[in-house]
Figure 1 (cartoon, rainbow, N blue to C red):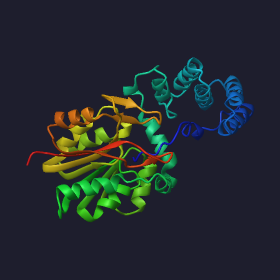
Figure 2: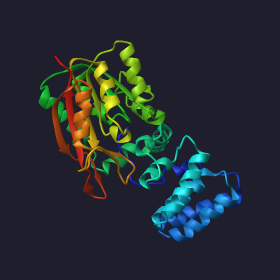
Figure 3: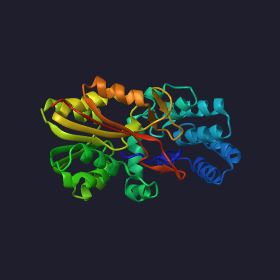
Figure 4: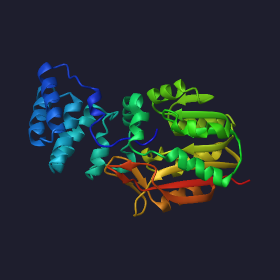
Length: 316
């Protein structure tokens, strides 16, 4: 899944009915007011909606967002916690906001249900939306791989977090067999309609890689274009990729980055990985780092988003 999320609150709108007409009306009016920037009035309406329908998780989530915008951190955290109680799968991403407020562990805050819901929602307009973000991760990865292995046709490639198939389209001329996997069924459906891949699967990346290792499948090339922004720790996934790569296989991926150490949860609710974390994950997997360069694979509010491109290989 390629990185798209430009703000907050987009997932909360998916469950738009509480079953209570008055609560629903107040919730919708609150969202309209918030969209116009009147967060004080929106807070009142969201609170009224939550009072009228106490089990309506989106109202609590929206209340948390509005309070957070107004600087009421304690009130926002209380609302996000209630949203999480009512929706323990956390399709809205309440735990991510709690982590940003210092009220939850960022390492565990990104729920699979949140990522799946986010991209199921965006799938129909995903490709068009990325055009406005100057998205270039597949092209940057292909350039790096062609620098490392000029004029090579890869026998078997795996596209991790394949999304709608943007990376698959970029790499199809370089591979004989192309497989893809993504957590979002709607994104996989978009990729399947393009008829780029020889094989597509829907599921969690680590579980998929574990199953592939169990079947003794070997890939010559594995890529992950802007996918690891939804994973906190890169050590497990790098190790899992190493187990499915054949001799002298390549692993290329992009991440967002920051100037500090370790991993941070950014304001846009995506993880940013430091240079040291990327180096450490590659080394721990027993891979040889061929390239680690600073790149911008997309823009945000008209500015480049700082990122890293990594290319690693298994021993020959």
